[in-house]
Amino acid sequence: MIKSLGIEETDNVLCASITNQTLHILKDGKSLKDYLMSSSKRPQSCVENSLGTPWGLHEVCEKIGDDAQLGMVFEGRQAIGLPFSGCDKKKQEKNLITTRILRLKGLQEGVNLGGDVDSFDRYIYIHGTNHEDRLGAPSSSGCLQLSNLNVKDLYDQTKVGDHLWIELVEPF
Image 1 (cartoon, one colour):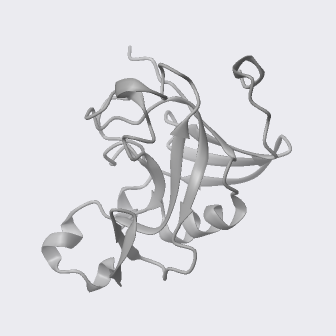
Image 2 (tube, helix red, strand yellow):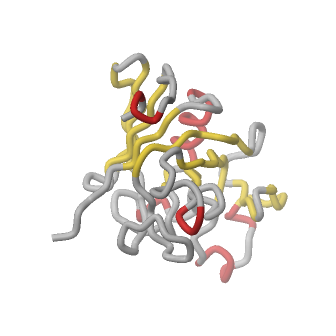
Image 3 (cartoon, rainbow, N blue to C red):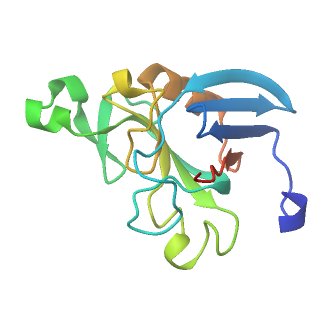
């Protein structure tokens, strides 16, 4: 797949299994770690405003939150200065973006890049969540969510440019 797109392979490759709700990090083809995750609670989709998790090959194009404390809430990719535990109850009920953000860019024209299927323009991330109890089951609005400790760990092991493969699950 990567070679057919004219893209050079990266040392680290992340693989998201929608079926198993897990994210795997591979280095030089060897499994380093598995993380429990949550993808979208809606059907998988690459289309803008669908709130579905896109599929296919992506790259980590931006890392946000280098020194943010665990649980820090981000809005518009900016830390708001409060962890989710310091937010009011109404805000805590929402699915917040916390701790770190790995912003994704699609690499497959017409699938997850360009037009109304552009993962970057859709603001698709890997990020922490304030609802860690929901991990392991679909519960996001399109992003891949991890626990706050795990997203920090993944962030520390990932470089801008690393690839992410998101599995396509065919509906029955």
